[in-house]
Image 1 (cartoon, rainbow, N blue to C red):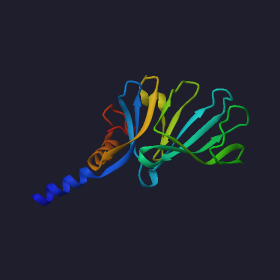
Image 2 (cartoon, helix red, strand yellow):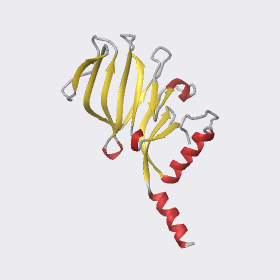
Image 3 (cartoon, rainbow, N blue to C red):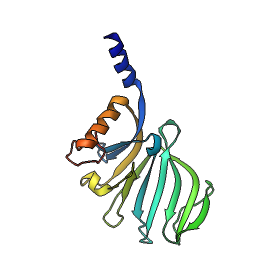
Image 4 (cartoon, one colour):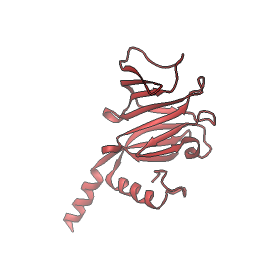
Length: 172
C-alpha cells in the first residue's frame, strides 16, 4: 500500500509543459502537451495588409518561455519583421522564410478576426482560433507545467471529447 501511495505521489510530482490557450477573461479554452515530437507549435494567419498567408513557428524555451524560431511569409513587401535579433532569410517556394530566430515571450496574445483566419497548429492538429475561443475576442497562449495525472486526463479527454463537447480540441 505504501509503495502504491509513493508511486502516485511520484507521478503527481512529474511536471510536463503544456501550451495553454486562455480567453481574455482567463478561462482555459484548450491545452496541449509540449513534449517530445510535439514540443513546438505554429500560429498561421492571413497578413492584414498584404492579404497573404503567414505562419510563425514556436517552441518551448527555458523557464516556461515561448521562443519564436521561424517565420514564413507568402509574399514580399513592407511590414515583415526582421531586425538585429539574428536569423537567416531565404526564399523558399515563393515564400520569405526567416529561420534561426530566438525571440522569447512569456506569453503571446492573439486577436483572431474573420479576415485574419488565425489557426493554431500543435501536435499535428490545426484549429481555428475563433472557433476555439467560442466568441471571445482574445487568446493568450502560455506554457504552463502540468502534473503527469493531468497529462493522462488530457489524453483520455482527447479520446472521448473535451468538457465543452468538442472532440479533440485539447481541453482537459
